[in-house]
Length: 125
Image (cartoon, rainbow, N blue to C red; front, side):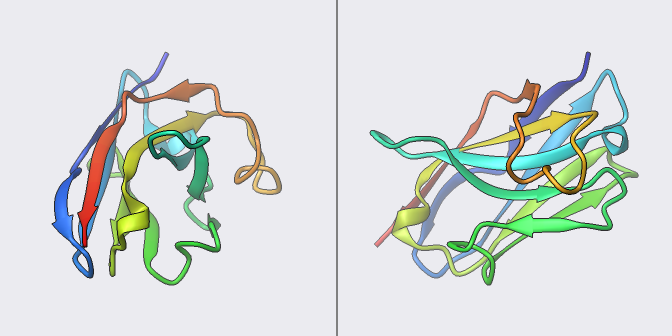
């Protein structure tokens, strides 16, 4: 079993930046495709970004594709989400998720098996 812990959330003004980290324990994160999701109060969970096991393929939701970047740091056993030019509508709890079997073709739309506890991101206007 892999355990996932998100960190790096906080309060930031519109236009600012945050870098979220998803740390894995119990397993090597490079063995898993990883995705970030977010959920705002009263709204459904929303896909944000995904990255393949090798790190060679990534995907980003249209709402964030020019502002957010997902990446791997295998030395730290983490996957990060760099968030720039933050907007109030980015306010949400951000979750990382991992799965050992999702292919590149479905890694942005598939059902992920393992989830972290979430980290709050609040963007003020």
